[in-house]
Length: 352
Image (cartoon, rainbow, N blue to C red; front, side):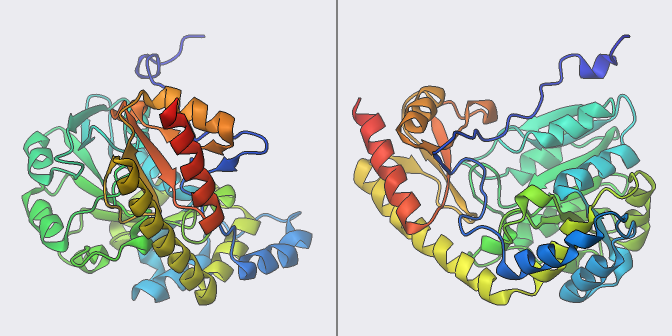
């Protein structure tokens, strides 16, 4: 058998590492675990797992549509937002087409583009932020997708409503702009885009959200896209059957209504962010002020070496060499105790 040429040099995704007994602050998960209401829904649905789930995901789509003031035809549910971006590439990318994104961002944008024979073009971040002007300059007649990560993974920075509107006005109608807003729930900066409100003017916009971060359901894999109905219909043509499993659908619907858990999670994140800022300042480490549930901190050391040493001391974090940031780490904002343990491990690793 001969593998397709476009896959020969395609690097697999490298997730945050697990280590038995270590605190995991490597993958931007909710340190409080899942929503209690989601757990209750999971227990109640177990007896039904002998049956296929609703292939249309209609109950969840209706709940999400009501939340965003749209119709269920504007929502595409998937196995994590990763499936949504893959559907976009499957629907629109032909061999030889191109996509555009930042160099220092989530690697799956490149993966899904190259999976379907496309080529990725990159613009470097500008001081940790997506450089929308530089990205627009890379778009040409072959560009089918533009991936924007807002807030950006791994820097936690975000651009504004005005910046997004100006960018969209520059895009040709045959170029799909994918706004990945996996961390949007954590944003407290003024001016963050109300991307859904722009769908009426921009039929080539796809907004992605996830239940993996704020809602604590990373292991169940539930995400969704928001788009004009005709665009959503194109994505559904590429979707495999039953990709969102029954427990995932039940838990996501329940988690969506658990406002107490949401508020508690956001409060823990705000407190942890302030604590880590103070500790990084005390240690003299540069970092990007974040609008997400993680912080990108520059240790001034090889990130792989620092990650291994901190892991040996009891905490896993994410080295960012693969993102193009060779001396930086990305650390999930954890609970008060987890954050304190991480700082102790970091300080010890820095002293060696």
